[in-house]
Length: 459
Image (cartoon, rainbow, N blue to C red; front, side):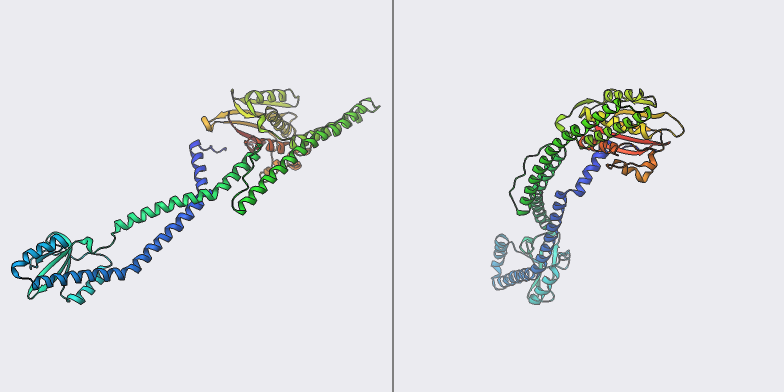
């Protein structure tokens, strides 16, 4: 059974996802982003390791210095001046001194990687009974205990004086650096891929039959050589195209003129009816083969594309096919199916499909060839498509040989009966459809026979 086609939104999402996975810009961007992130992580780790010991030494020396100076100031000051001294320490230095009581509510010291080493160094200077806390009686700070004679005191420092960057600060700086790095990666990726985008755009335009503007022959040597080679190739192919047009005109004149003369001589010669019919058949076949060569080699200029009424065109072909005595045509043609293309080439394509079905699609055991011709319109907006389908009821083609049908000069005699022509019928169809940006699908029909489907973007 025929599988259901994807919705336009699913198809668009799939294309976007494929572009994200396979696009060179995104690959370059992701690689640069990953490199930047890895480098920044390694840098942060290295800074943390290298900075650990100096930071521990600095904070420990600061704490020991403050406690020692405070201890000396309180010890050597007159008792009546200590209150004023404590006030100066609070207002000028941010240092507070409190009496250590047995019922003080003491929280553990700050939990960070520096604190164990700070405690070890400070206790080595101030004594092993020195205590540390992050909060005493609900007041947050950096608390250190010390003694004056038999009395114990708390000295509180503001946390900002003894701590480095916090985790949130590290995260903030890392975010800023990451954002700048990603913007730089996007800019670099865009600059790296700009020449490739130009080359891709020019190649696509040339493949569609248009003449692209010459690529700039500037930049790095690799880009310069690639653009120069492409420009040279375009000029050579245009010259080849011009030469081919001259050759086609010569073939059409130089080969068909002798055939016409031979046809006239056969008509006038004294031959039997069987001999005359045989020679005329051979001449007609030679003329058809020449026509196939010309059709296959003839270019389709995109500038010749117009709005073609596909419904009317398919109906005309079906009407002409129905007039043949050995053909029975069944049609299902939707009205108002329009597409951009070359009307002559499109009609030649459909005639080729019908002729292929007439020759090779005869139902076994019958003298009449049944051909089903359908035309439909599906979708809406940019996803609107015109579908043309030609089916026969013949023996079909082995599944492993279907791909061979579209190759030039290929005739599957064992699968499709007698062979006439040069084997270019479906190759011409495929070539013309590629130039129209259409999709060509060949498959065996359910119930026997061959089904050929063309899907074009609707006008």
